[in-house]
Length: 194
Image (tube, rainbow, N blue to C red; front, side, top):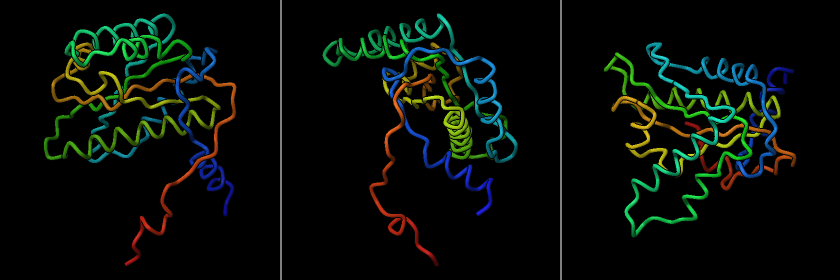
């Protein structure tokens, strides 16, 4: 095995999800966030549509986003389904995160490219970013809860109807070492050699 393959393999195998409350509040330099966004920008893209987009929140904008997210949940949730603890979770989710990035698919001008491929390309961009974060010892969480997929979130973010939010990325530092990874099924059950 060559050194590059070994290094890439190590980053892929050690990438883990760290929930935002386990982050320590230490700030990531914006220059490093920009480096991660540059990695995201090298995702594969059919027809060179480059559909990935990111809205970046830092400083006091992190807590403002979280408050807006929680308020959106409160406004859009029927009274019989509303949970105060879920409101609080959304409201304080970013308290220890350094940056929040909302990742979304910006539908391009090539209708011949299936939406699924645009979503896949954006997901690849997110994975590039998460792997880069791992290489820089930055903790990450790809969240899809709360109002992430709700049409009201698109409106809050001023996105177009054809755009699709793929998640809310929380980035920060964590004091604890990452936990062991696991797979629930052996690779042999997921691959069929023909």
